[in-house]
Amino acid sequence: MTQETPLINRVAESGLTTLDLADLLPKQPILVFDMKPFLVQGLVLMEKPFREQLKQTDWQLYHDQIVAVYCSADALIPKWAYMLLASYLQPVAKQVVYGSTADAENALLLNAIAKIDPKQYEGARLIIKGCGDRDIPAEAYLAISTQLLPVVKSLMYGEPCSTVPIYKQPK
Image 1: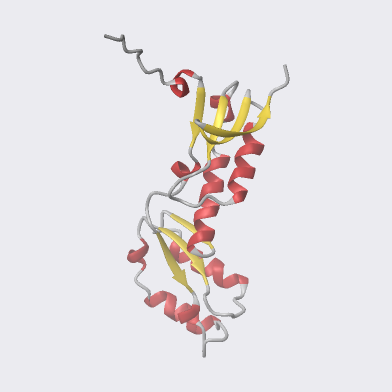
Image 2: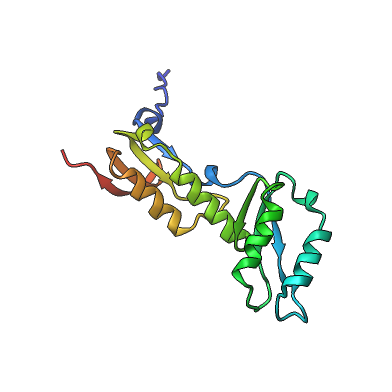
């Protein structure tokens, strides 16, 4: 009989911390507010008709929702129109973001990264997870690196079993 050697999880014992940026993405779906239906002849947004249409909109559809505001038509939208729209959305929506769903998701991710307290990673051997079900934009990796490089002992990209070294604090 041979004595079995217990399996040792070297990754768990390595002292590595993994941060998955996908965990910072919004959990709820993002609703889109497209300004295209408010355009006159599909070309221009005019103040009076826009105000009337906004008054007739059911704003409860956006209650406690994340709303991405954009225009799917190739039209010039005056800046005041976004301000006016915000005056209707802000009281009911959880959050209002400019752009497509992907733009809004990226903006919310960057906001979440900015809110991370770097002190919690002070001296850490940190891996920023590189694979997953959700596509993480390059600017998120730039933002997290910029924020955490001053405090981490080392920074890596990938998975604990296969990392790309990015930074190691000088001794």
